[in-house]
Amino acid sequence: MDIYDKEIEIIKALQSIDMKEVLLLPENDTSAEQIYLSVLQKWEKWTNSSGKSDPPPDFFCDELGLMMDVMRIDDHGHIGRNGKSIINPTLQRESEVMRELREKGVFEIFPNAKPYSIVDTKLPTDEDHNYNFYRDNFNRVVGSHIRKIPNYKANHPGLKTIFLVFDEASPYFERLGTHTVRRVGDVESGRPHLWFEDDAFVSLIKDSDIEYLIWFTPYKYCDMFDAGCGRIKFPKVTVINTKSINAPFIQYKTSNMVSTEL
Image 1 (tube, rainbow, N blue to C red):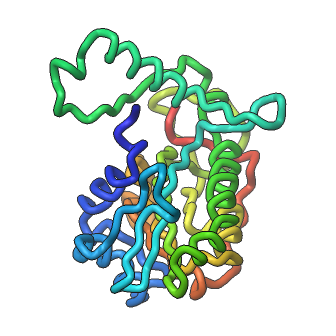
Image 2 (spheres, rainbow, N blue to C red):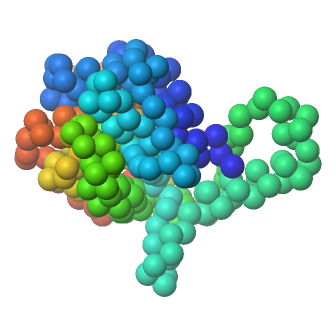
């Protein structure tokens, strides 16, 4: 079991992020800021309803008029050849590693350790993770939770709906020029992937019953430079007021999208 299989651990990780690493959309949106601060500064008011026998969504706060569902996505999971089952080699390998550690008694020796692993699937980069997996995984997971919103509203009428997406994907960029074999240390030209402005992602939430989306992306770090601005730094958290963001969003060329992670 991975530590982040528990929704409350994702909340704890989110609460460790400095406000300077948070992007509000629209910029300076006070309602989006208050939504985020409710999780950071008023968490004692929330009720944890993430147990298997609890009615959804995962957390709610009657006093603040909010409810929140938590979900994980990455750029590894994808539909198998049978067109039905989800294949995720990374999670499969993580499960194997955790099982091996339990069998060796590691967690008995260190009972307070929080289980978390980084594994190597040994797959070629594009088979291990890619933009198509990422886009489709986001739309599949978030879409399945969107379809459950009527149930959330029936359980908690009148509360605003927040989605917290724990996004474990690597950074991506849209490369320029021809496709070549990439090696560690190579420098390439292109534009960074701004996931929060990507039409292939944002159009799903824009037209949904989600009112606020907290997009937690702790692993999107890489060395990207703009000729006029220097190093590009991605936000760790993006808080989106879904009813106040406006198109046009960015249309990326799928065939040119590559991960910065080899």
